[in-house]
Image (cartoon, rainbow, N blue to C red; front, side):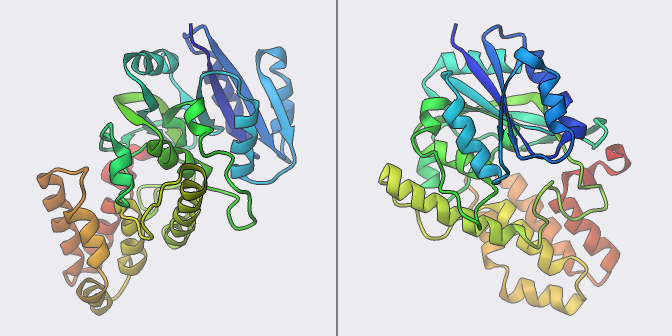
Amino acid sequence: MKSVTIAICNYNYEQFLADAIDSALAQDYPATRVLVVDDGSTDRSREIIASYGSRIRAVLKPNAGQVSAYNRALDEIDTEYVILLDADDLLYPAAVTEVMRRFDSADYAKVQFRLDVISRDGAATGVTVPHSDAPADCGSLLRQGWLYPSPPASGNAYKTSALRRFFPIPETSEGRYGADFFAIYGVALVGQVASISHALGAYRVHKSAPKDVSFANSEKNTKAPKAYMARWGALRFVARERLRIDLPEAFHDFSHEKAIFCSEVYGAPLIERWRWFAFESRDYLHSIVANPFWGLAKKLATIGLSCLCLIPYAPLSDYVVRFISNPLARRGSAAH
């Protein structure tokens, strides 16, 4: 039986860490190992880690950021496959079994699966991410600059040898975070990706609510575009240096363009909304119209919703922006 490591990278998530570790230990796949890399936590995380004794393997390191934690995890892993589980998320008991069944069916570099979105206290919201499956050959589209649909970090299982083709990622003061970006997209350059169309885990959203315009635990929409650009630049560098692959200077991604759209339109006066659509919306519209992962119905619906932001009624315009940007807004009070 092939072995799998669930590697949990943690920094100051004492309130969620035990749930993540418990979910990893509860896997029904016998050859599952659990590794916890603590990146210099200053809360009670290390006490929690110590309480598990020999049931897990722990690495305690000074704080250096998520990229450093991923690099260290890849140094420690000695199994053929790995799931990089965020310390605030969960896996369902059959997750590894289903992932390994898919890995055994073909030569995949990554198997991704959907995640149920849960609130800070673990309550179900009725939302699942991502909304689209990725094609098997994501690499050819990535070489054209298209970022493929992927779940957050915890919804991805990797062949360890594929990750090591481009890890470790250079550690810089500007690039401490976003390690999952490099794993998710870099792996598509070295092999095919499989998608499982149902949820095998849960993604905890503890910094977002239905009335928020952002749907994330890290960068808000005002910061996300700059972070995406920096990470794309770093990915291009690693792809060129390690894989001899030249990625285009610009990339295309609806999530990225959506963040720009929201930061420019949300709460803006009517004249500013019209100005942005008239003069600055080209990349946003291109990420919809030319999107290779969407069908015609979804493209038309997204364009139609976006145009509602041009009507002279700010409450409706702002609601539409939240609806497009934050999946929790589509469920209303169900997310509480």
